[in-house]
Length: 176
Image (cartoon, rainbow, N blue to C red):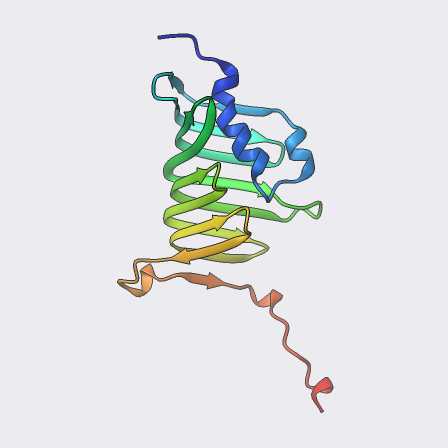
């Protein structure tokens, strides 16, 4: 096996973090730390596989998974896949400390298209509001969020939970 090029191993993760719209500006200036039980680079396939309690962090960004696979083509990273039971993503999104938290059994980020897909037991939480379903697709470039489900039972449906504290009811005084 050839020696693993550190810059190639990090390229996929850097690209994912660098283009993610939730990021604090300071996150992009931080070092990236990847820890795993093993790492394997398959040069002919353009694939790097991290396995065993994989964690990736950069500033306030944190991704934890059983396995992360980075796909490259022509020296450019094209796709990042995280698989776990579940895979977990967390990031502070503003200076006030609000966080976005995502979990699913399968996360896939298409770099060129700028599309993040959470599949199988997908859940996204931000400022107390939770969106869950079989699949959540976030188009990073267009800022469009889509959720879908298999719809076979009530448990499989898309579900949005909005905390009562964020719901504002007009007061009776102002409606006379």
